[in-house]
Length: 211
Ligand SMILES: [Zn+2]
Image 1: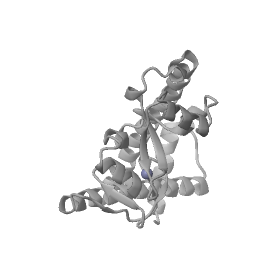
Image 2: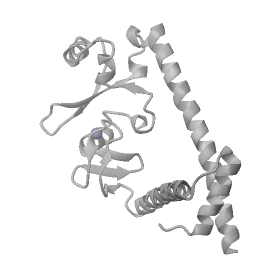
Image 3: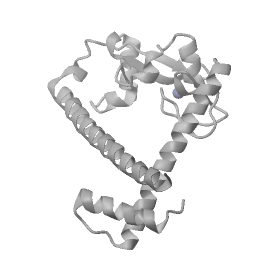
Image 4: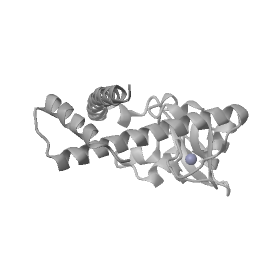
């Protein structure tokens, strides 16, 4: 995307007003192009997402993903050959099958805080074999996504099915989680407000220029 000198000057003015700092021509050009590129990317992503949702209306059962993504459930890398898109988002074919068969509930796709995965137990010094043993013993209840050979592809531990699991309910874990959420929420809120303000200002200038 090529921005005109006028637009870059406008950007300099906006920047000066917002951050009380003068940018050189080179800095302003780079920053304005970065910002424009970023919004172009966001725009493309939202267009792509809208197009996929429209396509779902004619293909209610979904269709193969059109590029490289991650499975919403297991996190594995997926592409056209092993990934599927439907109302629940992008999933690998194994997780999709597990959802269809009711082995894992659909809310797992959207509520990532509703379950644990094996690696989360590893943070508490439980290695995978220990976790699997606890599943066999019945100490933990797992929903198991199977691969094509009938072996475990992913273990999903629903929080509501493992309420008594003490390690996840101790004080240090709760405080770790609270802080993690607090930091992420604050950053998300700040970025959202900043992005909205910047976008509105840039759009206003662009509209003024073309009116
Ligand atoms: Zn998966």
